[in-house]
Length: 91
Image 1 (cartoon, rainbow, N blue to C red):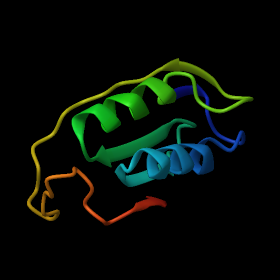
Image 2 (image 1 turned 30 degrees about the vertical axis):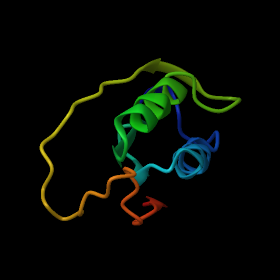
Image 3 (image 1 turned 180 degrees about the vertical axis):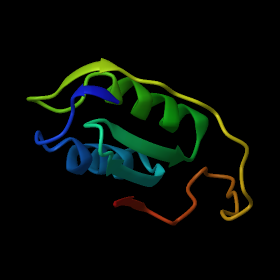
Image 4 (image 1 turned 90 degrees about the horizontal axis):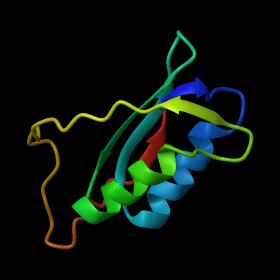
């Protein structure tokens, strides 16, 4: 995410929203002031998280979101419910 996304609780809010949606993955600040996030789970839940990310938490000003689908690495075993059980972490 680009814009005013650091110093506004973006990572904590994104992690909360991801957990609420049952999405696994991580979020971290980048040195250039942007935020990077990797998410995995049921497609509808990941899509919902992407929609939330475009707005961000109160105080954030998101000016852009670049989303890419990447092939699974095999590190996570898919479950029928889309929940990998791995949780969502702030890095």
